[in-house]
Length: 140
Image 1 (cartoon, helix red, strand yellow):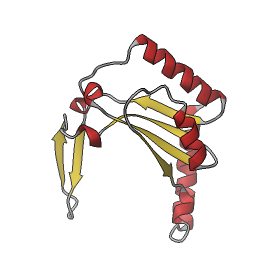
Image 2 (cartoon, rainbow, N blue to C red; image 1 turned 60 degrees about the horizontal axis):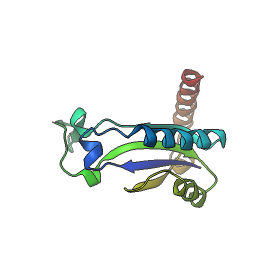
Image 3 (cartoon, rainbow, N blue to C red; image 1 turned 135 degrees about the horizontal axis):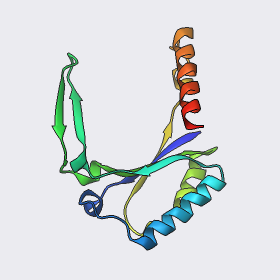
């Protein structure tokens, strides 16, 4: 199972406050442990919402773009990982080892094609396989 581990933003991350060298080293050690264990597939920090935008779609498909920053930091993301593990419980156990002192992190299972098994046509399945092959080739 794949999981997205979502690091919630806080006032510091939204103000562009970067981690200390000590915090960065601790996170680097933690990420190295995740990679060596075959858990981590991807992960990065995000710039503050002041460097982003939101795009809203209405029922006609029209869009409205709102430039950041966004007011509600509790709804924002400061970083993420993509992990592959057999269960949510194992993801929780790995997250408990993270070098965080404060904050909140959310774990959500990523669903793949199996979640759409009842509605996926052979054409959609072939397209999905093609896209995954292309993505895999880009990361090698």
